[in-house]
Length: 620
Ligand SMILES: Nc1nc2c(ncn2[C@@H]2O[C@H](COP(=O)(O)OP(=O)(O)OP(=O)(O)O)[C@@H](O)[C@H]2O)c(=O)[nH]1
Ligand SMILES: [Mg+2]
Image (cartoon, rainbow, N blue to C red; front, side, top):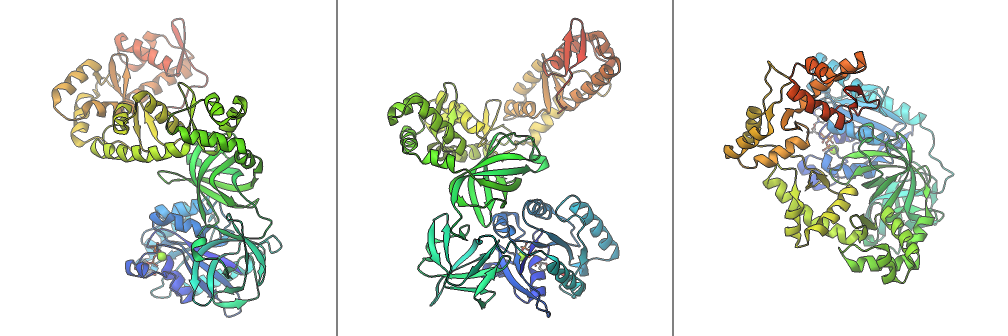
């Protein structure tokens, strides 16, 4: 048996399709039926007259419930990508596709739903948009079948396509040790605890003794069911319900795994990681993440051996142990905003790191760190407090920084307990959000404001904030600190002010938009709140650029740079007067501009001449 999964944007007709295919409403909860929206995973049994069958996992399309979609996504082998013909591909169509590209989908059928709502022209347009959206994804080349669950049009063709795809799917590693990520836990009167999930690999038989991971608890399988039918044995790819006597419902949660005894759980996972192309440049050596393995969502830190590569090795340091197996697929999202970063496969657990952190002297260092609270301590101080040699303390602290247990701060160097810092971060995040709401045009809150709020000395606050920014937990720009999801936005009044005072003269496009002192005086006289912070924001985002005593628009400067580079590529070198003539400005402006391009790494000065720097940075 195999698992079919739905995916696609909210309201595009996934659950209606499952109902039409199976007669089962996958929206199990009253709230889902009342709201007409899927909140959590739904399950249904698909059967064909000739005995071919499959389990269907129906996922929510709304982005708020993406964590639930992820809990069901790893089990899917045949994907039904549902796209409403009247709307075309939308945000979660693309996001789900990106996620599933990292998991175990082997075949895809694109279901163009609600075709009763569109005419022939619109159908053609929808097909063209779908073809565009799936190019280069896991659904590339998939058949596109138009259906309506209202009129029944296309349903026979879809059933036939699903049947053919199911028959062609290869079996799911039946001889590997069993591994079943749990997606539901409930109690059945007279039976006790039942767990359900997709058996990812292997076989389970009634009476087998398995282990719940990460708790490590032994359990005996009293009975097994597949869609209400009692089975003596089940195999990879089936939707399984297992009755586990002697375990309380409250002791198990979604994300736990029912697995063979040979699986270990660990918090340090070596991985092969492929970032999403658009996230590649933004990924640093260490990024706090939410990781999704099977039905589990785990907090941790992704450390890449060589950031910036398209496919490379790395380590996931999880905050709590997880059961994983080599070859298992996973995806990671950023902590906030929760954008998809990428995914990959598990290479194995790194027990050596876990053991090092579990060692008794490491425990003593952790205790000393926790006792210090927010006060950064050096390796020597912590070693003395924990009765551990300084070199050993430094080694333990390096491991703790790597696995997210400690945060390194600078000036002077020291270490802070990640737990204490996390609690403090929660408080200052609330404060930053308040500020961001109140002053949406500013880049964030200053260290002074945060220090006042936190009732801590500003120098300490600056060290802690820099440590958090380094760890990718907050954003830091030009002395302002903000939550990661914050983008400043000027008020219409502020915007109008800068449109007026920093305007480019179309007759003299290379002349500065305004002199800095003129602008500052105008800001003082304007009686518009927040102008100086708004100016900082425009400078930080590159909309305005300070060059010497003048201010240019970012677009204006990009134009000037393009002209400069064109001349340099043609002639190899340029003088200041050559540059002045090339851009049609005056010497007064050309000199500081040339110096600015030198400082920005675009040009290299050689006496009176400038040449193009070999590896000039990309234009912003
Ligand atoms: N006209 C028409 N409406 C449809 C069709 N299929 C579904 N709908 C309607 O579209 C709306 C959304 O359908 P659902 O099946 O709940 O959509 P969904 O993709 O499961 O939504 P989420 O689970 O919340 O992401 C409902 O009002 C359905 O009645 C169809 O073939 N034709
Ligand atoms: Mg639904």
